[in-house]
Amino acid sequence: MSEIPRVAFFPDSYLEVNGAAMTCRRLVEYARRNGFPYLCVHAGPDPGVTIDGSVSHLQLKRSPISFKLDEELAYDPLFQRHANRVLRQLVEFKPDVIHITGLNDVSIIGSYLAWKLDLPILGSWHTNIHEFAASRIVRTLRFLPSGFVNSLAGFAERKIMQGSILYYKMPKVILSPNQELVDELGRRTKRVSRLMGRGVDTEVFSPAKRTVNDGVIRLGFVGRLRAEKNVRSLIEIEKALLESGRTNIKMLIVGEGNEREYLEQNLKNAEFTGFISGDALAEAYANMDIFLFPSETDAFGNVTQEAHASGVPAIVSDKGGPKFIVREGETGFVAKTLEDYITYASMLYDNPDKLAEMKRLSRESAMSNSWDSIFEGVYDGYREAIRLHKDSAKPEANA
Image 1 (cartoon, rainbow, N blue to C red):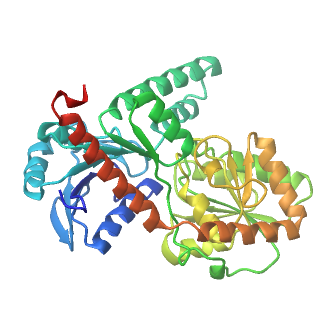
Image 2 (cartoon, rainbow, N blue to C red; image 1 turned 90 degrees about the horizontal axis):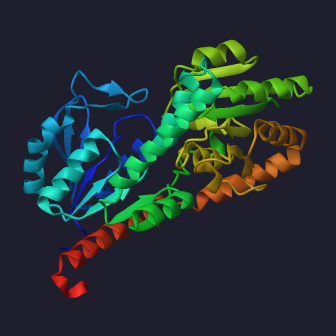
Image 3 (cartoon, rainbow, N blue to C red; image 1 turned 90 degrees about the vertical axis):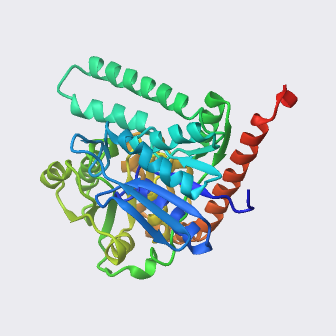
C-alpha cells in the first residue's frame, strides 16, 4: 500500500442539498485538489463514469420504486442490482479501503463488496437517523393520543439505533461529528471511534457580506423547513418577543420544506427566501443578528458554523451536535426549553453591546476551523483502518 491510500467512497448523500452532502463533496474535492486517488460511488440522475483529475465518479440511477426520505434524498430497495457494475469498477480501481457513510442503499453496496473483496472499512456517521425518524413520527401522528405516539416513536428510535450499531460494527474505524456520538458509538460497537468535525469557508461566509443597516434585529433560520427541524417553535419565539414589546424584529427564514406554508401563515413579520446558495446565502447569513436553530436531530449542524463565520451568534438546542459548536455566553447559547430561546433572544435584543461582542467572538471562533485539517484526520482514519485490517488477518499470532 502506498502512503496515500486509494479510497472508494460510498456516500449516502452527495448531490442533495444538505450538510452531509456538502461535507462529502468537500472531502472528494480535497482528494482531487491534492491529487489523491479516489473513487466516489453515489446515486444521481446521470449514470456513468466521469474522471476529474485523480478522482473517478461512478454515478448510479435509482429505480422508479425509490421512496423519499427527505426533500431530495431517497432510498431504492432495488439498488443492489448495481452491485456487479460497482464490483467491476472496484476491481479496476484497486482500493486500499472502503469508506461508507450510513445505513442506506449506496453504502450497503459498499459494505457488501468490501466483505466480498476482503477490504478494510471506515464508516463515518453523518445523520442521526434514529432521532430523525422518531421526530417525523411524532409530527406526522400528532392527531393521535400523545402517549401512543411517543411510545411508537421511542420504539422506532431504539430499533433504528440498534440496527445502526450492528451496521457500524463492520468498519474498523468510525468517525462521528460530535464527541457525544464518538463516545456512544465507540462504547456500543467496540470499534476505534474518532471525531470528524466540519469546517467552514470563512471567505464565503463573512460579516462583510451584510447589506442591511436599518436597525432592525433579524432573527434567522437556515435549513429544511420540516418537522424534524422543530421549525414551528420559531412562531412561539416571535410571538413572545412581540408580546413583550420587542417589536423591532424580523424573522429571516432560509430554506424549503412542507412546513413553509404553516410558517408563512403564522409568523407575523417574516421574509422567506426559499432555497438559496452561494452569494445570496452568504448575504442572508450576514444580514442576521441572531441565529435560531431549534433542531434536536442534527448530528453536527453546519449552519451554526456558517452563521458564526458570518458574525452571527447562535441559540441552539441542548440535543444533537450544534451544542458542541457554540461556546456558551460567547458565541451563543444552548437552550433546554422553548422559554430558554425566548430568554436568550430577549437578552440579546436588549443588550446591543453584548450582541456586538458575541458577533465578534462568533467570527473569531469560525476562523479557527479548517476543512483541510479535518480531512487530514479522515486520511489518518483510513490508514488506521488498513492497519487494523492487516493485523486482524495475521495468523493466530494475536490470539
